[in-house]
Image (cartoon, rainbow, N blue to C red; front, side, top):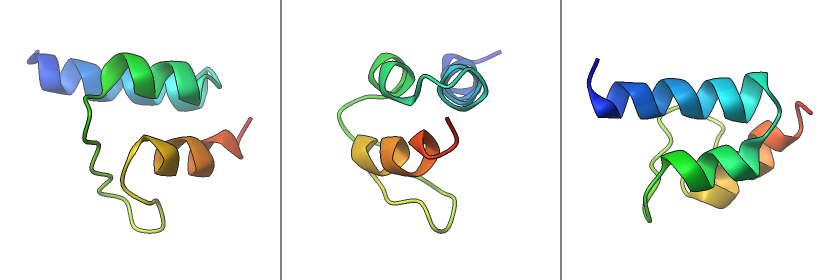
Length: 55
């Protein structure tokens, strides 16, 4: 499995499933994070804001 796919998988498993969006987005993304889901803003803050609500 490529490192990009592995990072994406781990971002969602740890960030959403396990409820650690801040730790996961800082661990598995670079300086620029582009979200491809509609309704979720780009950037680390967009990920944290949207998926943090699921905790």
